[in-house]
Length: 392
Image (cartoon, rainbow, N blue to C red; front, side):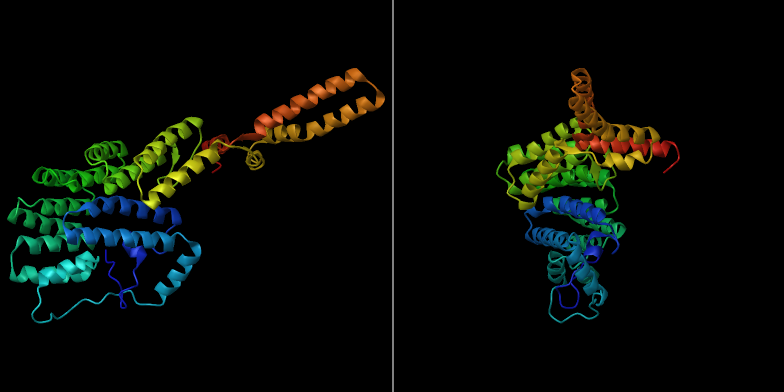
């Protein structure tokens, strides 16, 4: 993956950054941004300045991508700009005299310039078989999405300097490029054993668990770190983000990008995770907005609404059409009968007509005015029935 700023060093290809096509759906882009934030957030706590700068730059780019690509108007303007310019990043072909390629490679990686970072790291490796040169190559290859070469380079760095926890961390990151969570955790664990006071290795282990969907294990690791470092904002933010992600896994009707709440039990279980996220008291504005938005969404699904979707569902069922016609038109018939009974002075007829009217209105209310989660469940059942009958 290359996310090198183009030409004027200000334009970034956000689609390339996220690894999605320019016509990707909004839900896919939102998920990729979340995945990227989950992966890089733990690295912001790096004790190594250059690696911390690299993580901070990536988080800033992900935030910019969110603001740009998840707003329809901004995305349209961005797409026009992107289309009208070349996205080919220049690659250096000559090297200035009197410069340190290792230092230049580190400077490039700090700003996420992985293509040029790889060039300088490769040049350094040609003149020095040092662990640092191999490590810089590994980080550059990982940034470019070349997991195979990243792992080979990272293994060389670890072999030359096995007691450096940072090199083990970068080996784990290279394994994650190839989606090898087991090997990644082993490398992060080795880093944790070499640097017991450093929270980053364990934070990255939690990130692997989260990336593989095991949010409970991720939360367990981060909760332990939070107890050890209760004031650490990076841990608080990652723990809160994990609880919010865990809440999104509760609904049974989910496709990975979006979900539909279909029961009061799902609302209750999601609230538990949202409350846990709020209790962490992260100061990160995105986390705080996420907590507020999810609480509002849960409240909205608990609220009662008139189920106008019933009319669209009725098209798929003859019995439903008859039922809806009855509960919508029968009250008017009964109201007319009540008025007629009053007009002729027939008390008994009026009484029974009134009872029928109240009963019909009650049935209408019970069926038509329901919580949103029940509205969703009815639609879900209708779709399941249509699919079973081969009509979808």
